[in-house]
Image 1: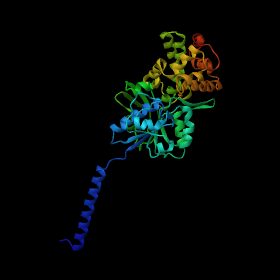
Image 2: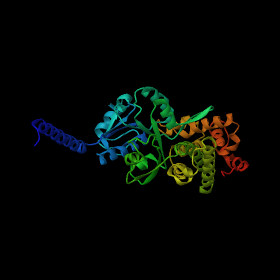
Image 3: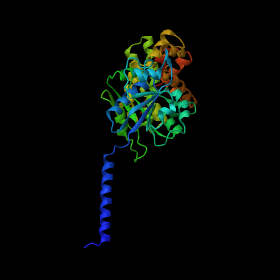
Image 4: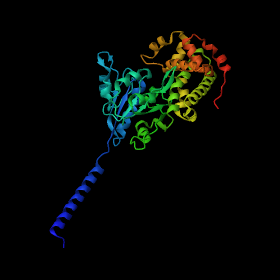
Length: 387
């Protein structure tokens, strides 16, 4: 027989085991931490992406917090604040009119308030505004936060190139991937079928935010997502295709037809791949030929979109490019203009401008008075193939 002391010990042990089992059961039933998501930017593309993300947080309540906050640069629309209109009418009447936004998408005018407590940040602003935004957020974002940049551009100067995602990482100390694809914002917002590419290489094997998490956050029945590791290729494709789109606009402005546009697209893809492999050798040529961010985005951008529209108008009206931006784009920017100028400065400093005749010609047409009718002659001079 057990002594009274042993009996008491066994009784206590049994109670502890039972208690532990109850705690384990409770922990198993307790929901895992849900990722909170914020979108920085509310232009037409920012609002379209925020719509997708909010739809997916609502569809995946086990993984994500329901509400998605969207930072909005506050403006007055008549006698009402834009944030008030978005939060009550669920429509961005200035930048994405006619599109119903999910009720769980919350417009926030204060940038720091918008991102506080978030686990995943989605950057979607014109890239020239990014330094100011990062300066406001510096020191306020935990290193465990993860980000995706939907900004099609690069930080470029004569001295060097920084990928937008890498710039965010450097400034804020958080890992950032990149989204780019054949995605005209109005069509995506209208739920017309399209594809996109996200470069997201999990920075740490222990990270709970995986490629699957990112795909779940962005993938919709009408918006198909491919996740790859090639951050440089995806980022550069999204930036450089805007230069090609301007050139296609010049061709359409002159009325040269589809054959000429096809030639511009081919030449543009060659220079995009050449540039990426020369200055970012870790990039993959297949990104430009097999992914939505490559050839598909070039085709879409050369058929429509801001840069193509601006290129057509430049030829037809002969007005200065920045005047046309104000007239046609209602406060938004055609990023190809800045990118063309910065790429040209970068190449010129390295004595490489002649090796990129299309990129150089686009810059010269915009800024140096080159006649766009000279394009065939210019492209004939150099036909450097990408091996």
